[in-house]
Length: 181
Image 1: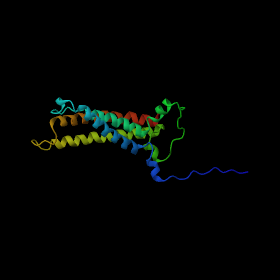
Image 2: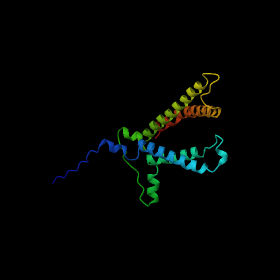
Image 3: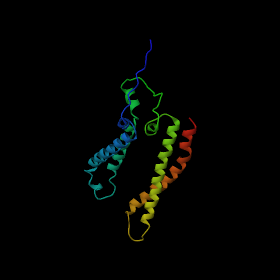
Image 4: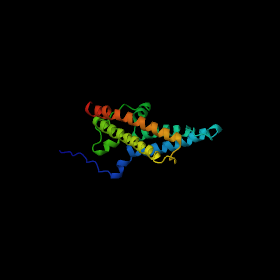
């Protein structure tokens, strides 16, 4: 007697976009940011001293906090802790998905993490360089201002911090993750 294993049907291409991946993380992160900014705005509404100043950072702080939680939830970071809290047994995926999709999802393969790390640091390095170009835009003309003084100072501080941190992170982090398991 011969038995044959049933073949798994091919799933449509759009099914790869549903689930825990970078696109879901972007959607949940953006939604979390807007929700947090709205909640922060509701918290700061009663504070009259914040209205006339440029110091109403409650909405921004809450937006970043909720955006981070949404981003991590979209990537699937909370699957394991929530399943353990609900009493389910611990499971670790032994076989990761193959192909290019694994570079956009949460993965435990050290080489994939190293490549994700490399491109993530590269994006922030690019943003730091973009900040340098924005600073030069401010310095094109001596009189006209593209940004207020406080925003220019923040831009300059972000540029310096990003370039120093990303330059040091470009070498050790990605290559260490890629070559050392």
